[in-house]
Length: 482
Image (tube, rainbow, N blue to C red; front, side, top):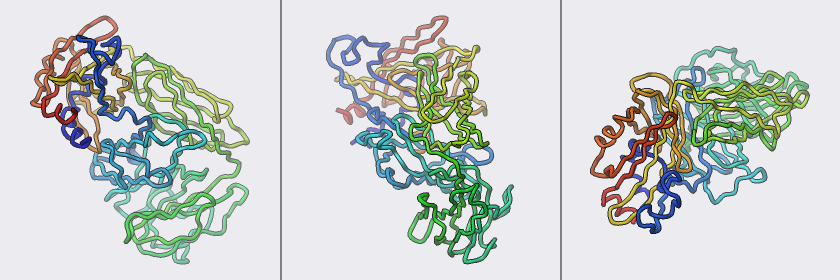
């Protein structure tokens, strides 16, 4: 039944995303469980899985350019201990997710406790016809929205990369041959492998055989080393990997991938994480890139989604004990400027606090909606992440998130904006003017047999434009949810 509901409502998402978030939004009703006219109880149907507290936003980008991988379908695999608890947007458990939009959203079973004592641990690998990612291990000790940026390397042509091949601090043999011509060098790497290990190089195998790693050159500088082999084999996807200790002997299939890795000495695992706290206008939301620079020259980078104020715990931190100092930098987006970088004596258990300030040329817009059925007042909640940019432009997309019934964005007055939301690997787009004089006409012109706009009230002040609408679903949609 739930899948039927989603298949019907998906067609409405492009418009509804701008109309708001939740029935009974606190700005519309004193008591969100009471009908505003009769005072009767309103039934809340959460079509957006609000009960799922932890969601993973997976972004697929080119390793060198940072551009999204949209030219071909990409298969995304979730592996490891807790991957069984992953569910799709429509509540399905899948072994593999496929997308051509460089994005997928995956939820985590809300019945499973997440804490420092019971962290979420899993691995992500992405493969396509011409791209491959190195396996990325993730660990989270808190609930919430987690952005996973998966960098993919172009692997369609077997040729030399920009860095030197076979420059590992150990001997790598394929079928007992050093510098084997059967291993095509794809790229040098600067990526975390998990367990305090870092990836060194990525190769593609031209034949089946056996990998061996031996003869560590510097056992003072490095505490361990190893190899990971993965890809598609005769029995499907395979992955030979361990960090306790790393594997040094394993098989590999033809056209499989080989990632070498090492572990530096003097590193300490942080079990409490580093918290990035961001203050900003209440109700606002954004996605920011962060960078953590360590004293030994290494760094950790990623992305966080915020609904202000927000606290994001960054896990999987391994820091040099000889000098624990770090610098944390947060980058602004199209809506907000961010305060300066923060220096900390240690990344473990510390908090880096930032302030997001709206850019001066923008105005605040709040979108609120109530969804109903003609013969039975039903409230529908829709909290979902999306992206926007100026209509007709090629500028980068800016991310935002609906949460708690509030949708507030900073937009340029007089411009038209293109909005999009991704459901199970497919984007749904909608263009809307933000001129208060033309918003209502644009929304009414996009009505369909599935829904109609009953009422809309647009209020304008010097600081805020509010769009307050009531949408009524058709009897066909309502029959599915009674």
